[in-house]
Length: 312
Image 1 (cartoon, rainbow, N blue to C red):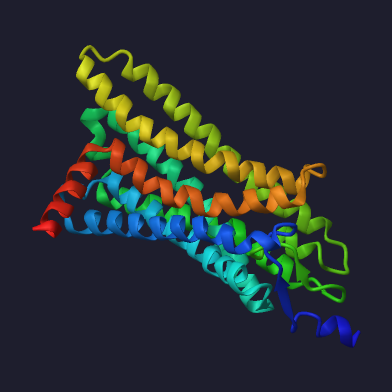
Image 2 (tube, rainbow, N blue to C red; image 1 turned 180 degrees about the vertical axis):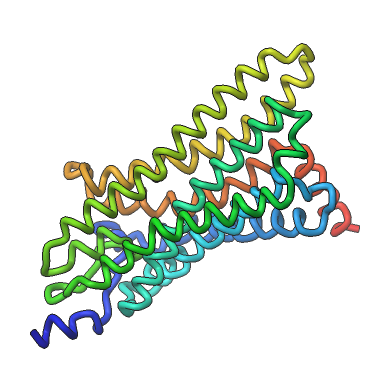
């Protein structure tokens, strides 16, 4: 009983990517570069949206939320991952592990909700342009952000409590670069069926419902776009929506692979699974500002102007 009651006081050891330990230093080079791109790119995006009055619209407000959430997602995992790559296996306390677990899953679910809000924004802008300013007022945009933030918090907080209640009396070695719910739960010497089913079903169903609503929104948007009489208007609408679709695909495809591999991918090599799980926390945050910078004319023009002023 003493061992079980005090089982949550020790440290865990993060091993990195099992099977690729001899390549950790080389793997760290692209990881570090992509993380810097994510940090600088999202920082520039947030700066431009904050200082440019022409970007003070609901679409860019949601985009700034996406940039902040991406920074949380990548910063929660990548610095610790780079430390493992450079210095070998690293210890992390149980409170630190729970904190990393929470922010990892919270930012993922919140990212999904923000993509849904952006799809709704594009739906109103293209399908009901005359009512756009009356439907998506600044107050409404703030309420949407508060609502999706609260929803994401309520979905993920039970995962923290479910992990915290577990006794860890066996190994404390995590063959991963960061703490995530199911990976930590599988180290417990107790029944973890509720962890598995809640951790898989509730966040997954929440994200899947977002995906379905996003798909419905963009189907209606495409129907409206192809009915537009002006070719320039069609190209502009498709260009804006194209950037959103690129970001959506980059976010969901690797994330769903990682989730499904945890639950059903028993034949997926563990090394490949861990490597892919690391990609989805670093690649989308780095590519999002690049895609929006290239595809969205307002941001592209402001970025060019910013660098011109810097060079002068």
